[in-house]
Image (cartoon, rainbow, N blue to C red; front, top):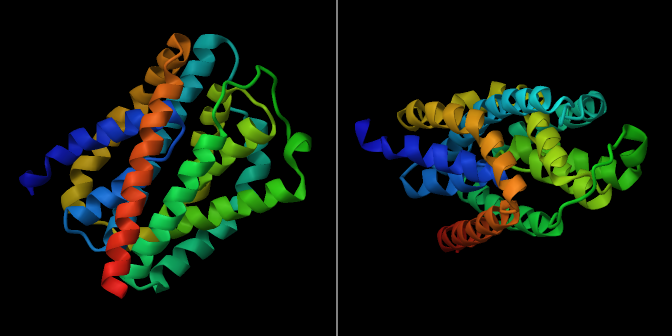
Length: 261
């Protein structure tokens, strides 16, 4: 088991990178786990559980940042509407993951991770300081995107944070920091139901290292992201995350197609 110790440091790095870029750690965890020898289903289950705990710690940190700044950066009232929309579809996605053959999981993950990278590109920019309420985003297309976000999250552990940030930042013009904080905080509330499925597919030989890593990274990541935002460096971190996501996504598609064909 000790040979997997490097995943503690990988988890910290991925968590910091995801927190400062607005991406999702599972986009990098799942390829890392599969290339370390886990089956696709175990990779998704381990990444799902790891990310759930990391995002929970991130939510705590974003809440504390709001206290420090004298105004909450998390749009809590918006979550009242988003959680019920996403929740049922997370469960559907988790059940579908349980039914998919392993190589198809890799293929779906590769395609969707590249899609998430494209969405991250579309969220390029700073945004405004204005707030966003439910009435600003309750259109049919946005609701469809939140439904897909829940479905993708249950299926392959990615989607909720990225697509929520896309709606809030790209479509509604909310400042990036508040978009990221709200998107991060949505995940712990909607992903808990998916744990009922994904906990069956957790490799504890890896999770014993990645979970402490994301606890550390999740707690300090938002503060690190806040510092990068103040220094004007957040877009650079996003670019790094996007490039890594595209590379790993292409790799997952390639190995899936080799196995299937």
